[in-house]
Image 1: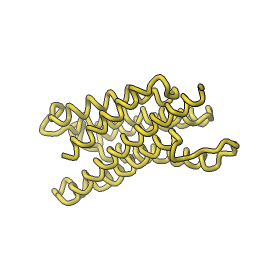
Image 2: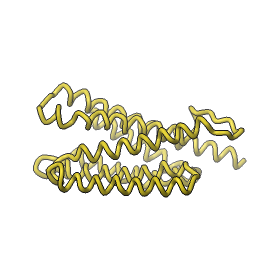
Image 3: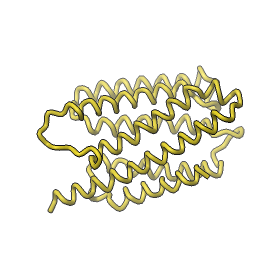
Image 4: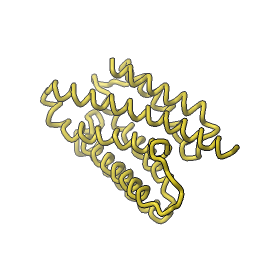
Amino acid sequence: MLENFYYVMDVVAFVCCLFTYKGLDKNFKRLLPLLSFLLVYDFVNIFGWLNIYHSNAWCNNIEDILLFAFFTWFIQGFDERIGRRKKVYIGAGVVILLSILDILFVQGGIWKRATAATLIQDLFLIWMICDYYYRLLNNDSDEYIELITHPPFLALTGVFFYYLSTTFFYSCFGYMVYRNNYHFYLIAATLLNLTTFALNFLFSIAFICSFRKNRLSSL
């Protein structure tokens, strides 16, 4: 039931992005291909069309790497320090390489969930977002920023809470789920669904705020 509910929010975020697309900043326009991909991906997963050996772990591993690469690119779009950006991309490349090695050789092949790889990716993204928060709070610009309507803050906060919840989920995954701890799975899955809902909700608000801000500035 919850999965169907957060899929509705996938649709809402996609529609908001589509209808505000022309008025969005360049960095937010990058989210349309991502939301299109997630819309299709989540839809086929609802019906289990990607399951092999009664599991979709293989495609989740690939999805994690793709999302990690995309969000690294997206987050760095708000960092004007070109030298720093290059170092972050190099670090992200190392993380992707470690993730592939973990999937293929450490955690039993592509048919099992690569929890170690996911945790490395999650922590790297959380660090990048915390770095964004630090720069935002220590911004010497005279421009007044109202965080509750600041599109980058809204979008990255959604990403932050999503990856914070997946970090919790996969840090306990091997110990709890493989031991058939149903209560842990129920709580963790509910948390993931709620943070996915929050991610799409904040994306939707960010699109509307970005569109409204650019429209008012053009008048």
